[in-house]
Amino acid sequence: GSIVNISSIAALVAGHNFAAYNAAKAGVHLLTKSVALHAARKNYGVRCNSIHPAFIDTGMVDEVVRAETPKQAREKLAKQVPLGIIGTVEDVGWAVIYLASDESRFITGAELKLDGGLSAM
Picture (cartoon, rainbow, N blue to C red):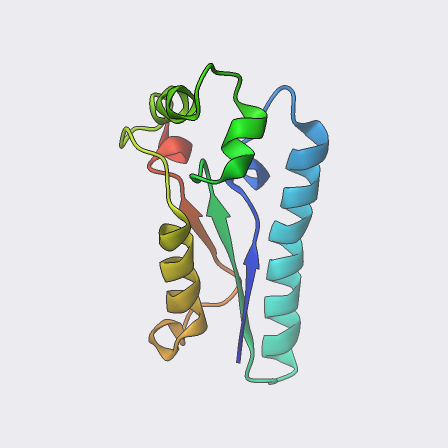
């Protein structure tokens, strides 16, 4: 079995104006690690990992970024990412598929960053 929790890059990289969001996502991050260790010690045969996306092309972008158009909002975010793009829901979906599959059978308690290199800066 596999549990895949969706957190955020905000769990790993703090923002000056997102304290509550950072704290909530960090809670998901450590919950994932605790569940992974518990399941391993109890020999449940269940792995637990978390995914930490940065900017993903969803309606949330329009709510968070102040811009004249949705296209401008996405361009503004992309400039903050080393790869120069923002993620898609498909990017997140493929990460979930990988962590839920047997191809990741030796991965537990890990965080997969989907941030275009943002956390490497």
